[in-house]
Amino acid sequence: MSHLSNPRLAFLWQLVVMVASAVVSAFALNEFLIPANTFSGGVNGIAQLLYSAGKPLGLQINTGYYILVFNVPIALLGWFKLGHRFTIMSFVTAFLTSLAAVLMPVTNIAHNPLLGALFGGILTGVGIGITMRYGFSTGGFDIIVLVLERATGRTVGSLMFLINFAIILLSGLLFSWENALFTIISIYAATRMVDLIHTRHQKLTAIIVTTKPDAVAQAIQTAILRGVTMTDSKGAYSGQPNATLMVVLNRYELYALQASVSTTDAHAFINILNTVDTSGLFMNEREQAEQRQQLQN
Image (cartoon, rainbow, N blue to C red):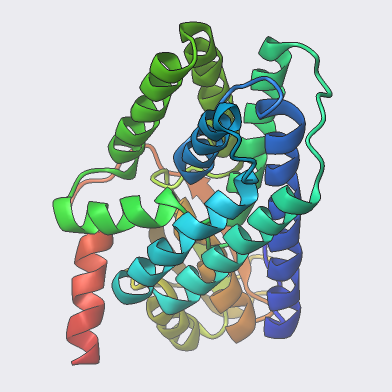
């Protein structure tokens, strides 16, 4: 179920995705990563570091509380720098994750640090990937790196690498280098799962056949601010005239495109192709934000 044409049903489905992501992420933390003393990436990893470092000092503060505390200022940053809808949905997901982490007991299912790191990483990647597939995130550093990307022009991947490298280094310095090696496995497994479910910077080409080309093109440009190429076409079987629209986009925009097309023309045919490379004008996020600002003014 990649998209729903009914806006209300689409919103309800996104709520289901939020809850599922929160439960899966909290399960990965409490049942695999924390018992193995292995760390996740991003805010969750920092929350784990604080939890593990505080235990010998008698500080029994649940990881979920740290996750929530970190996400409040991050959400405020996203509110002013990114879209309100994206920020709200991401923060709600982070809040649900922290709540699930508090309510879910910490138990050791794997009884093996390697299995804990591997399955904890896989489940973490599932939790992140399903949210990104539907146009939002799990909050935390996902929001920070998007803001930094717009400010510096560097890719999300390079910024996330620096953050995760710091977590790996701290896990080795504070605990043991064996923990650091297992943390590398965990983060790698999570990254691979996100790649399988959703790759942000992978470009796609959408081929759309519709009898309402002008309305569909306008809906696409409003939803994702991408150029649309239109050509006249005709159905070979029906013999009826129609139009074929071509749009190049990244995977992060796919859900919004599908929803906008289906809402405008429920009978439109959409074919999604992987794009190896592009040359010429293809706006990055910073250029899109500047374009939106110009249109609003």
